[in-house]
Image 1 (cartoon, rainbow, N blue to C red):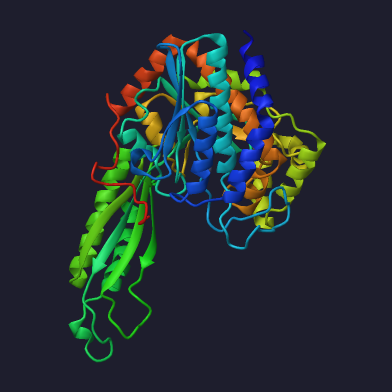
Image 2: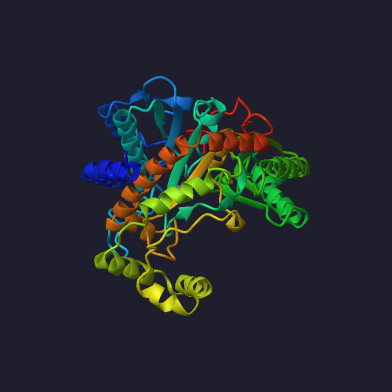
Length: 479
Ligand SMILES: [Zn+2]
């Protein structure tokens, strides 16, 4: 059987259905842990295609997985789908001037409407490959909510939901076609609840103990901490509750959320411990009390180095999306729509990446090639993803496939518009073909899969350990 031809034809055959579903997710644009209709839709389609679905997985109402097995034994392939949107990023599909569907409403500014459907189409093509080829095997589509919130995959990994997989592949909408060479930071996030005592701030302030003062002193303490932490680490915060709006009342409560990032989860744990000390110090200074509620944590993401070359070769076999003149014109209009200072930074990068040709690329800003994997390209990215925990439990690779113009900036209305456009559609279908073919090529290489597993065991010290203790439940209403 010509596997490349088979998966390409299968994906093309279901293309119009899949793009209809991409559009449905695009229009639903549901926020993290609130993806009820999006997950219902995906579950319904999985069942229609003969997958056995388990709902409400890992204690999260919108988390699920669908399994299809053919024959006895064989490898088990996992594919990850995300489908949550970002607040405030509503934008009409394909529209190159700012024009929200509804002002300030959520939108798919990270392209997860494409992500969820690309992986779904890959799962369907792979299922049909197993049936058609008579090869035994299992394919599992994991519906992973809240990637933009407190995540789900670390809770799924903690429950061992990926343990049955020989390998897991996923993809992310991007401006390039390549294996993701990001080393994403590990992260921990917690709410700090300060409690004090209220009093009349004019008449009897000496009777009060201010929780807001404590929260502010925690900021001061963390600012001093910054000099004495590794330069790659990040500490950021947001006030969740500043204790009310009346200056004439001593604030008896304050809640501040901290997120701590560093290249490796062990570094994050250590730094989080120091931030907790700062919080305790702030409480002591102000004679208030503090409780820390650890709510989210992701392990660092590093691509599986053993599987990456294999995935990269399958991506090259499929090739980049086939862009036409209309696509190039749309991409150029999106690129021009970024603010002038963003464009200056993008031009700077283009000059570095494309040399003298940069203006030609600027005029036709779509990636029409697949960049080959090179482990030397792996660089630390400040961001974090819950895919890290999957890669710490089983061999995992993230593919980047172009759904947007070169130079695109993520989490913008431009990203939303492109995700819902013809560019997003072509990227989604290409990603499906790449994922399915990469999975087949990997099933053909059991020795490489065994080595990839060894790589995981070396990284995790023999067993996946979730950075969140068992008592931390998914923070569905609190994060
Ligand atoms: Zn994303």
